[in-house]
Amino acid sequence: MPAASHGAANAGPIGRGAGGFTMASKPKVAASEAEEDAAETSEKTEGEAAEPKRKLPLRLILMAVGALVVLGGGGATAFLFMHHPEEEKPAAPAPKPAVFLDVPEVLVNLSNTGSDRTQYLKVKVVLELSDQSLTQQIQPVMPRVMDTFQTYLRELRPTDLDGSAGLYRLKEELTRRVNIAIAPNKVNAVLFKEIVVQ
Image (cartoon, rainbow, N blue to C red; front, side):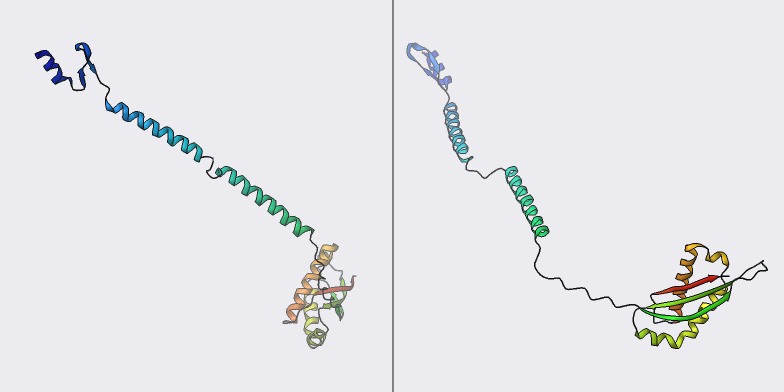
């Protein structure tokens, strides 16, 4: 028996069975694992049941929002382009008729360096004004305007007046000089009535 007492003392979870054999008993850990597995399974079934109740996936929400934005933008665009209000637009104010002021005829000799033949330039000019009241303001300074024309035109060479580009440059330069002479008033343009080179 001493062997049995020795075996019983060292057996721990091993106990004596029938017939003198000792069997190892299952540890209690296995029972607790089984309980945990059962709990996890029940949690999974609860989670699976709860998952369909979960909100829609983010991707589906974004697609729905994008579709609404596209449809809303299309509707707004169609409304803005196809909607014609019955309101009458205010009529544009009638443009003021242009006012013209005749400038006395100018006759100058052109600058001919190295040539014996003298050429003349005869110009009839009209000033285009934006308002009738400017006529009374320009008349007192007309001698200044004439002096500006005379000094500039005397410096021209016959080649300066060649072609439409030459006449355009002459027109722009005369307009600029007239505006300087009559400042703070301003003319819209200098128009040629007649221009002759002899």
